[in-house]
Each structure stands twice: as structure tokens, then as C-alpha cells.
Amino acid sequence: MNYYPWLNAEDSSFAWIMATPNVLANNPDEYLLYRGVSVKSWFPASPTFYLSKGRGMELTDSIPNAVNLCFTSARLKTFMEEHSGASLEFLPVRLLDQKERPVQEPYYLMNLLDTLDCVDLEKSKFERAVIDPSLIMTFFLLVLDESRIPEDKKLFRLKESPELIIIREDLAQGILDTDHNGMMFLEMHEYGKEWGGR
Image (cartoon, rainbow, N blue to C red; front, side):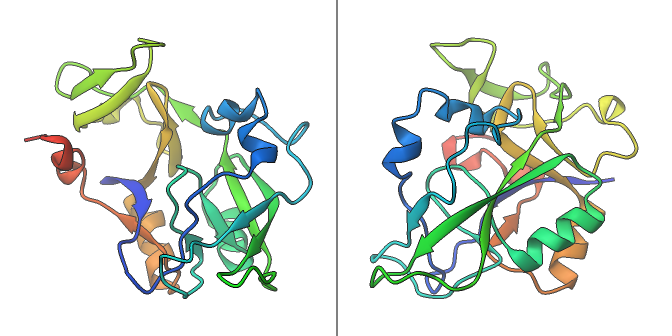
């Protein structure tokens, strides 16, 4: 079975989120949004995210963003709850459009709680984080040890790089077949090439 990183779709017509609101950015627990742990006990009620005035206008099922979070429409939320088999928290967020008007459609921050230790460290090429060397900051080449991925896992974070979400081929195809948009599932051998990977 193939696996893909879940990334932002590159389409100039799509709306983007470029910044985290202060209510989250100034919270000392904000980093936990990227660690695959529950945050619902402290996550603020419907924090406001602004859609960038310098990007497109089209609202997508997964809002592309520069803050390494996963924003989902209600439609994608339902699909993920029914088909992913993953432990997920969906935290309501408020979106303001480019004219700072509330977006009427409901959106959620999808917090994935499943994390796996499955990076093949011998075959992968990467740079570890300076502050916490147990974490990988940048992959130049990402190779998974599929023998360490349970058969029922369709969606998970990487233990060494929990900001990155990995999706199994069948679930990714299901998302695309039901016309959800805003995300891109990149071939694993392509991931990291922008940083000089081979």
C-alpha cells in the first residue's frame, strides 16, 4: 500500500490562511497543536482565522495554510469521521473572509491524535531540530518502514515529525473521488525535493 504526505494544494484561486490568531499564538500550549495530543481541554471557543487578502477567494474543503494546521469543512469532517478510522478532534474555528466578513459555512481544525514510529531512519535523509534533536525539522528524503505500520492505520502523524500527516492510498483516493479539494497528496519519493532531496 502506498502512503502520501497530506500537503496544501497549490492553486492560485484557493483561499489561504497565513497566520495564527494571537489567542493561540500567545498560548504557551500552542505547540501541542502539532504533537498529536488532545487539546480540547484548553482550546479557545471558535478562534478567528483571517483568509489572506493576497491569495485566492475559493473556499475549499481543506483550507491551505502557512501555519501547518489542517482546517476542514463540515463535509470533509463527516467523511473523515466515517472513513479514516483515526482518532480525531474537530475543533470549531471562525473564518473571516478577505473583507473581514464571517464565513457562513462551518469549519474545523482537525487535530489528529494517532502517531506512529515508522520512519526508516537509515534510508531517509533529514535534518534534526536544534532545540529538540528527537524531532526531525526537515526531510530531504522520507522513507517509511511499512512493517511498523498497523494494517488498520490509514491516517497518522510521524513520531519524529508530528507536524506532518501521512495518509494511506485508499483513504486519499476516497477523498479525491468524493470531490473534496484544497489538499494535495504527494508521492513519497517527491517529498523533500524542494529542500534538495534526491
